[in-house]
Image (tube, rainbow, N blue to C red; front, side, top):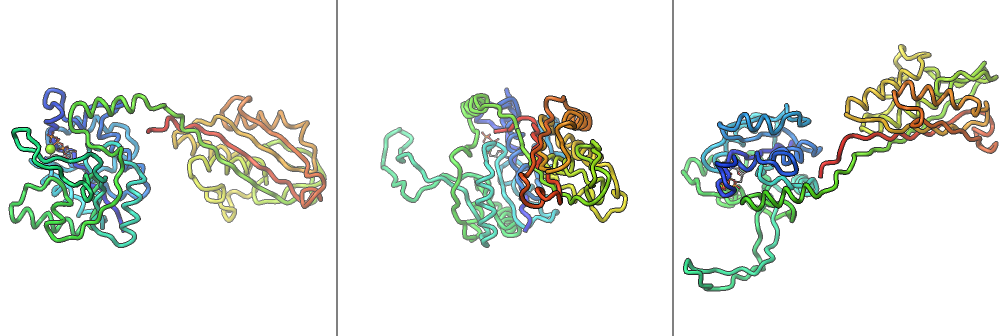
Length: 398
Ligand code: CTP
Ligand code: MG
């Protein structure tokens, strides 16, 4: 199953005060275009397949500006929309049909507060075999029917009434066929895709929507969205990774720990220089950006790493972190070794970390403890290291 996404963004936003201020999907809330918020939600969702954005032929420059430097934006597929939302969706479905997508979520660009929890609920329903899903909220206000004269005629029971949201989600072939049938019969008065699906005879099932997933429709909606985002605290995206490693002690002439050679009547056995401390820290760094572990990057089966200085591994992990936009703020290693004594070498070890990672000395820590003569470490059969890395990856977006 591949879940494609169609984002419709070709409307003119007349109720929100266009054309004076431009289409609402390109207006800024919390300092960024509405559509940038919307796209980020889908671009950062793990199960998103191909994403088609349906834009107005006049909006090419606005769109390019709105997605400038947005991670993943270069993979977006754009296509031109039509006069009505229905036509725009149909254009998006045609474009999506050229990809590997088997299912589709059709979403309004003007709903920037869609969240991953809702997308997950839909994906789980797809996994369970559903093929037409409508996120909706039970209506909570009491409903009245009134005439144009403003006189109330009746109170409408709200028990079975729901307010529809997007992304309305379908098997791609089924919703495309429904749109084709509607176009062929010149039925162009549908305001959402679930109504086309219902009309075409599909069984549309409700799924719990999200109270935050509102459509920005009038000017006031945009002002309120801006207030909400501006009030949200800008949390730093701090991530912590841990790493653990053990190497065996065998007869030899010394051990290398944190890049420092310490003469001793044993050595650590291993494929590289067996620097157990740097191996643990390498794993800790990789863990802050989901980049696997040291074995993925430097397989023991690869002869080029035989006897290699482990600082190469650490420097490589630090590069990967930086490529992901990370700033290393702390590196901490605890060595568990009965022998040799680490204390005289701690400062040299910290200096090595500082140099390889390119961070100040006060952000590098090396500690050591014995294992109180207990177990394999206590019997001087091996040395273990535990490491923690702290990395800041910019600011968490609400
Ligand atoms: N939409 C579209 N093509 C159209 C009309 C609407 O792609 N011809 C999109 C809008 O850009 C929006 C979504 O459909 O993301 C929901 O439509 P709506 O809220 O009605 O937006 P607008 O049509 O732009 O606003 P208005 O009706 O106030 O003009
Ligand atoms: Mg409209």
